[in-house]
Image 1 (cartoon, rainbow, N blue to C red):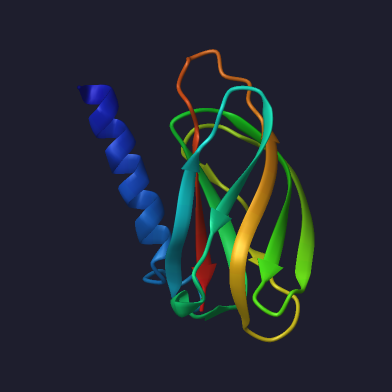
Image 2 (image 1 turned 60 degrees about the horizontal axis):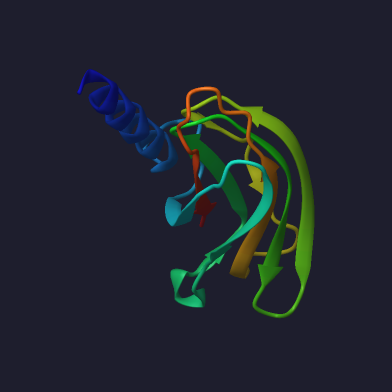
Length: 133
């Protein structure tokens, strides 16, 4: 039970950091979606609805398990896309750097990401994406 409480507390802290209520976070962060990832090398997609608004940056968080994220592709509503090399190893309850989106504020259609897992604890990682207005 303590393990679940600690995970919830860490997740709440991550949401607070991304909420725009800190001096280091400029703008307002909004939750865009999440995926629980599989064990292995894989690709997942998080669909984002255009009604969520326009964004100028994104950030990933990982909770629950370990993950190696290789890259992501952000697909925009106008048909354009932006490829981002991340090459980052996540421990559970960690986040990426802020990834600036090219151009002015962009409407995001979906976010694809490629990863592999190294999970000795048998906990599947959950990848969440936040966008900055």
